[in-house]
Length: 235
Image: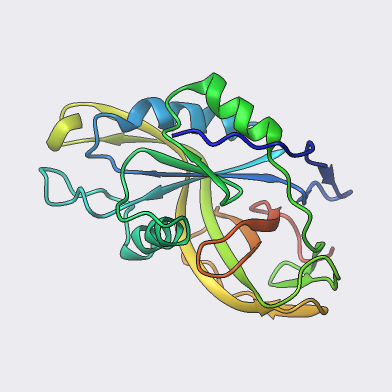
């Protein structure tokens, strides 16, 4: 279900190193390799991965795993994230595919024009995020938001992965998946003042690292920033 927003367009920037800075529009797809309705939404997300103004993330959920095919990238943590959104928005169920844009608006995600319209209307006005070192991130002070917000670390694979599916509704197909989330870590809280976090080592090589500042318990995403794989420790 599409909920229209009446918000100003987002502002986007890149620093000199190529790190994409806020205000990115964060597009999160919750999907399963076992869901026959999901590939069109995945194709739309794959296309958005080339947009420097968008942070496109594919989360594999687990509740399809007993229906003929176990998703190779799904974890309970990603299913829990989708449920946090559901509870925040007073929903009593989750489904696939489901897309959240900046944690605010949700839709199925199979209609590219509808998805583009929601992205155009999205905004974020949260704190600046800086990367003084590859393993350290700083969320800057801001008076825009009172109270605590969550700070999330998301690591994802920017490659297009060709995944053969051996069973379930998509059995026999090879699915192209991009920006697949491989790590989701709660770093701590931002309460309006400068705060710095040390980042744990990545579990896999070649992953991009994103940091999200988000209202608690599945609320709106206020800011997002990405450090791409291979960017140096010299910044």
